[in-house]
Amino acid sequence: MDAPVIVVGAGPAGMMLAGELRLAGVAVVVLERLERRTGESRGLGFTARTLETFDQRGILARFGDIERSTLGHFGGLPLDFGVLDGACQAAKTVPQSVTETHLEEWATGLGADIRRGHEVLALREDEDGVEVEVRGPDGVHSLRAAWLVGCDGGRSTVRKAAGFDFPGTAATMEMYLADIKGIELEPRMIGETLPGGMVMVGPLPGGTTRIVVCERGTPPRRREAPPSFEEVAAAWQRLTGEDISAAEPVWVSAFGDAARQVTEYRRGRVLLAGDAAHIHLPAGGQGMNTGIQDAVNLGWKLAAVVRGRAPLALLDTYHGERHPVGRRLLMNTRAQGLLFLSGAEVQPLRDSLRELMAYEDVARHLAAMVTGLEITYDVGAGGHPLLGRRMPGLELDGPGGRTSATALLRPARGVLLDLADNPRLRRRAAAWGDRVDIVTARPSGPSGGEPADDTTALLIRPDGYVAWAAPGSHHDLPMALERWFGPA
Image (cartoon, rainbow, N blue to C red):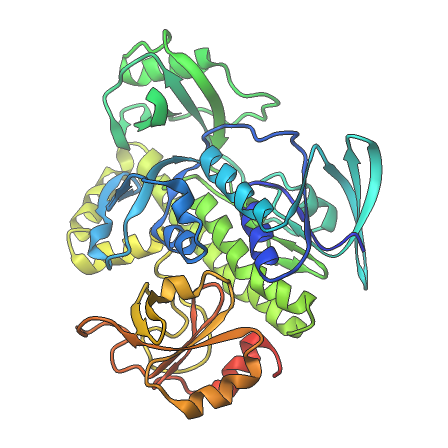
């Protein structure tokens, strides 16, 4: 074996997965077709859940001071994320190129082997592993791994070569995206619906402006190269009457509204994450964030199987948990596309939804959907409100002083949080001490109806989701530990 795991694709999902595997002590080779990072801004910012995840891994500090906001939208209708809890702010203007840079530095700092200029041509799987044919700087050669993960985007070579089914709907329209300099435009942060389509304008760092142009009735094209800026400027003028042809284009691209998802996230020893597993309209920047969350869900599970600590059944939960998330992602982005990109015939629907969004329950539901904070995994029966849900950034006082649930997750290990100083609980979990940190602490500050109030213990998975709680879980603690962390 050249490595236990080969990851194909060095975008955000691939880099996040590589870092997660290295935190768990698993060697990983990342193969990337491009010789260097593109530097293109692409996806902008992070959802609230990705901000939390980066903080749980100590990555967030690498970004320095970033602009955060509770203001968002659903299909172009304003939506205040402030209806959720205190962790609901999102990062707004961080270009994907910056995210990729920090994730790559993090992963390589942990020892990930990143090989740029290496294109996967074919693969062959057998019962013991996967062999990939690779064209690199020194010619064509083969590499072998026990597991292969495709994080290689919407046109994934791994997905095609491994024979994954990728059903869905083809694109019905084409939209333009451009980052430009040298011109001032009125901000249209959540977009503006016009008689002939939709336009969006937002500032980026360094005096750059991001514009999106959707001219209704524009058929999709199979392009071998990006559109010219002249095409973008002409469409902009037809929609707005404004002439932007004198602007300096920094980056120009086109995208469509195709919506597809693989029927399975794992086939044998080949797995998919990110855009390789699901493509959709980029509404609200959810795609990159969902791909990062795919990687965080998969990393610790794959590492546990590679190291022989957990059975394959744990790896099966990757599809079981993330496929429904991807399916829901396609649903909400298609709904937003209909609201945002359709003509006057949809205005009654927009007006009706705007009225409904004035109700806090409706606003909270939609905000949780697009931020990733609604996700609930099936971890077993029970009535505790945190079961299967993300662990809040609870501040804690312990024998070592002040800490937090966020800080305890930095090593990407399981955490058993003993909130009642219960020696019997700690003894029952001691046999899993090589993979679960057992921490005795109490919430700091006064209680006030928080989800952890009246809770005596919590078992938190490495991805930050609560797998067991007392009181409130129907399973006992050893059963939960064995299910998620393998036999003692």
